[in-house]
Image (tube, helix red, strand yellow):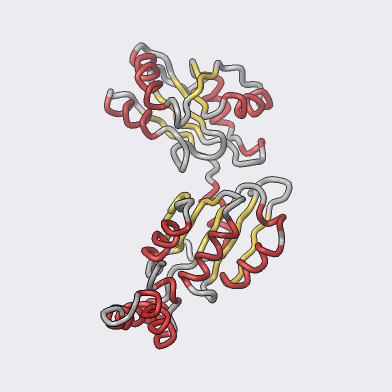
Length: 275
């Protein structure tokens, strides 16, 4: 007998690759609700059919979420149960759904998590990097200057950093991480998790960047990048580099000041200045 209650929003995690990672509770929930709001109905339908789920689907994605939310909330207020799924993993984690969950809660509708796969957490669990404190940054800005600027802001963070990245930008992002964080900083590329060509590579950023640039196969599929947090020694070096840079830039162009500050302090130049 289904445990799904009417008039609720069920936020259901789906597999990030392997279809059999869909939990028994998720299957039960998806079968029992009145409708499933999916990021891409064409993408989700094969997974649902694989598990014998024939519940009707409606689309809820970044382009229609603002307009679709009101109608879905009305359905739940009228007594329909609704499940929210994304193309892969846990909804709302770099995926649509925030507006729906927020509107449902504002309307007094119960929102129930049905946990499961999440690429960021799956990658962290096998990366071999400190996992007691970490920060999920999602996707970095696609343009180089903005991406480097964000990385510079994170350069002194002591927590393990987790990023999603598209396959066609993964090499560029690694190169920027190497330049901003320093080539010796430990990093991991977790690619195609739970799929046939799953790869988890951990190396210092300089070596990992060179390896990915030299191997087109490592620039394919779904990618998670993890970078070790800044050590106390590296943080002190970065702080000293920025102190020297601040003094030098009073007399020199920023690029030249950064180059000299990096040479004096040993801090990565692009961790001092983005330009």
